[in-house]
Length: 104
Image (tube, rainbow, N blue to C red):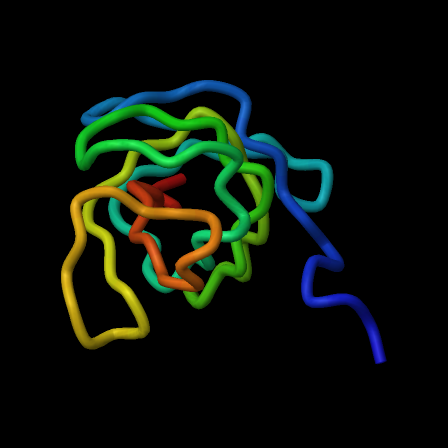
C-alpha cells in the first residue's frame, strides 16, 4: 500500500485572493478556492485565519487529488470536526481548510 502523500504536488506561489501555481504530475496549473480537511500536523507552524503559512503536505480531498503545497492561506480551522478554533495546533490533531482549488 502506498503512502497517503504519493503523487504530491508542489505549490510555488500564492496568497489569499490570488492564484497559486502548482506542479501536478509535471504540469503547472493555476489554482484557487478552498481545500478542506487538511491535517493540522501537516502545517509547519500554527497561524491565524487569513494568515499565509508554509504548508508541508496537504492530504487532499478534492477531485484533483492535490497532495502538497506551501505558502497557502488558512481559511478556517476545525478540531476533530466538532469545534472551531482560529489557531491550529500541531498537537491538537485538528483539521484546517486551505485556500486552494484548480481553475486551469
